[in-house]
Length: 250
Image (tube, rainbow, N blue to C red; front, side, top):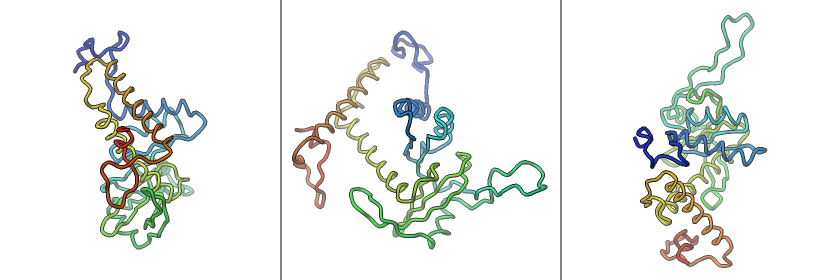
């Protein structure tokens, strides 16, 4: 509403900011990051909310084949087999999708007996994980993806990636590392206080967030150079690692 009304608080250097959804902002940020790493592939690891065509299509259009997505698959996503080769004399164009394989949940029940055990580095230690992978077609992205089902005692989780060269171990480890992003949000918003900004001017809001992110980065650089780990203020049984608040306190 502030942007639509073209209020002064919605301007930076005299220009009104364009309205962007979260997905549009994310795509713009990824393209900006890719400009700084122009010779290497870029893999975006996201939760299921961002793992869709609205992020994939505009980013892929600009960055091309060096951009890939790794995300969690929703339980009701419908999966399809890869399309077969066009038969000689077959009329019409080649099919984009093969036969319907079922939803993520239906396929999880079908493939659980075929799952194998993998040793992965997850949450700070080496673990044995039971998983199964298959390359399928996903209509939400309109391209082939590698899906990995990870089975636990009573539950399962499914992940997918557009990078078909990634191994099962890599997919699980990369997605497991995504939890550090959630921890980073807590550090940024609560420990440093980015969510407590009283600013209303667009430039001031941006500056406040940038300074908060810089503060988090400097704190972790400081932690990395400490000779001894900080003492944990709130001790947890069986956990030796320190928290961000412990570093911030010293």
